[in-house]
Image 1: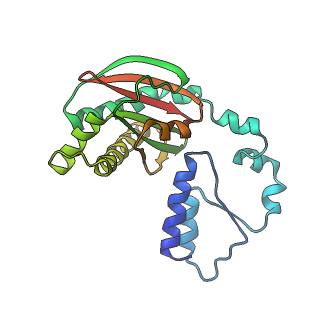
Image 2: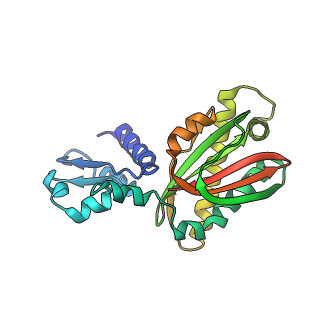
Image 3: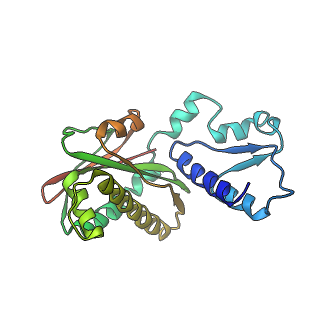
Length: 233
């Protein structure tokens, strides 16, 4: 367990939180490993046990890990009242970031609790970012490619049609959204951590991740460019 492994498992744990997954180490010893390594991994949500019976024999722990039944896992995926209550902060963080990055003004067109619904797949790319802590969930954002290109132009100082570069910029933009979201919630004494952002070159790739789960969908327009915000668990 060197510093590279520590970094790998910490990032893996952050990504796993997007799917309500918990990483556990069983039987690991720390005679030759700095105690700070274990502390850093525990801070990122990784759990340590001496033997498997410590997990399998603890029904309460299994329930917390989501392994007690399929119903428990399903319930964790349902959007709850707390998340809906804080929805304006998620929207504010998203809108403020995109307005800043594209020099455009947002207009909210509709908001519904439903499975994600995309009417037009043309020239759209997407990104998602997860969060966990006092509350957990995932934000999915579907961008018109023109909005992503405007943000990319601002960051690199020139226009580009390089999709890989545009997706990298989109990831940075969504990371900024996550940071703003974290700050706004912290003002309300709600502490969360955010995962690394993921980007999708087409809408079908994103819909495979959403798995028909319900959430809050908000349809927005930036200078008439349609934009979709989806908050789920």
